[in-house]
Image (cartoon, rainbow over the protein chains, first blue to last red):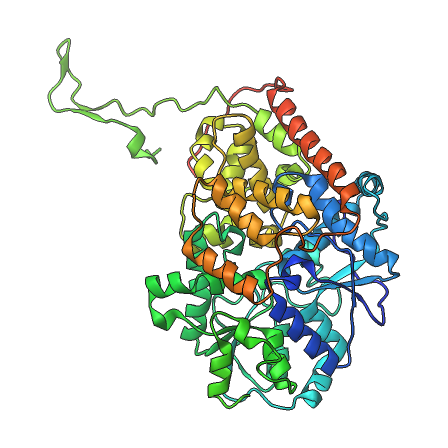
Amino acid sequence: MSAAPASRGPSDPVPAYYPGCSLDGLGKAYEVSCQIVLDRLGLSLDRIVDYNCCGATEVKNLSHDVSVALPARNLALARSMGRHEVVAACNGCVYSLTRANDAVGDGATRARINSHLSAGGSPTYDGEASVQHVLEYIRNRAGLDRIRGAVRRPLRGLKVAPYYGCLYTRPKRYTGVGRVPGTDDPEHPVFLDELLEACGAEVIHDYPAKTICCGGGHALSDLDVSVAFSASVMHEARRAGANVVATICPLGQINIENNLDRIRQAYGEEAILPVSYFTQLMAVALGASVRQARLKDNFSRPDLFLRERGFS
Amino acid sequence: MPIVEPSLVTVKREEKLELDGIDVSGDWNTFLEPRVHTDLDLKIVDWVRSQPQGETISRCWQCGTCTAGCCMHTDYGLEEFNPRYFIYLAQIGYEEELRKYAQTIWRCVSCNKCVERCPKGVKVEEVVHTIGTYLEVSGGAPESPADRFDRAYTENLLARGVLDEAALFRTYERLEGRKTPARDLLRLGFTMLLSGRLHTGPFAHRTRGWRRMRPVLTKILEEEERARRARVEAPASRARGGSPGRAP
């Protein structure tokens, strides 16, 4: 078994972009606001057109080979576009794509997975695509100075709790975080803190729920757990003085927001905070309107929150 | 040597006991019950190791780092959710004790903190899921809600290459035997549908070329399932005498 390589490998002027099911659907606001941020920072990504679902954390419990072949097919498509870099915006996608890379590091596994892929009419995968989260991509490719220079409306009055969730850095064996140069800290990540600070927000650097699980994987099958965890994200953020939570994962965002009513019932109104994708907040800072950043899409209504503070 | 586990001893205090004219009053019955398990079966750990998701189980040296940070154990406070103990029981083959946790193991939320922190490179989360699978495949443990969801999820994505969330919610609720989906799911569904964020029905997005991929993956799924069952039914590769069981 191999571990994540010690370097990212070659970098592309325009990396491949893996949207995954959620950015194409439930997390549309994430994709739209991501696009705004990338445009305004002069970055671009090239979408993998005929992608398939990566299998998240569910498929691997049923079948190892299917759980590697699904993400490997997407990475193979990126390679056939001539790319070495793949950017994904969902923590679950980053997890399963990097997990596939780890698995195909073993020659025998790669041969077996490739025989499945060719039997299914897909290009084969050489194991040479490196995967990163869009947060890492924006922070590293644009750089904090360029972001500071591009800010049109600093996020004054916003006390943002950056919420990373589970699988952005974890496990480093797959994601390479902490071992590959230019990646985040695996136990105490800071990239999101840095980006939001560059946008002029006051950032809550330390609160206990910063990298806990939101329970999203069991959102349907273990409701108690998903309510308890999503409540503690908002509750701990508020206790630390935040007035808004920034997320980097569509599953986390949707899970927290879909539990709002139950959290209100169980813990009261004071446990609720507006929750927004980090790119939505960044888009507003970079000059997009609240409407363009689709902040109204979020059930926790960060649009009202931002309008109260003078952002239009 | 002090008795470290007094709960296992029923001390019988004889205030006035005489045998053949000799005073033998005092504490009797102070020996520990023999606690040697003879029904340990290494089939479990062999099986877990034979699965690609479970092969790292043999690296575990029982340090407990996984459990110290486990969000189900520590944050949610489900004390009996103890990945270190699950692995220990599997390693020594104490199936009887392991089965007591059949309804607990599935609650792992896959946050991967354990995999991140394990100093020995055990993929704890996948190993724990594999142990749960063993309990199901080998009979006895009913399918858990999480397993039903995994199955619904996998079937859903295999159908078109991408997820149809609305269909997934419906399938899962049906598997759970709920006729009408929860209110919040309905609300989520309607909001998403009206704002164009939910793709469902015959005209929803599908992955081009999936028609060829689907049967290949379905076949792997079935083959792996068959192999899992065949392996569990096969006689154990080797047998070994028991070793004392320990409390967690």
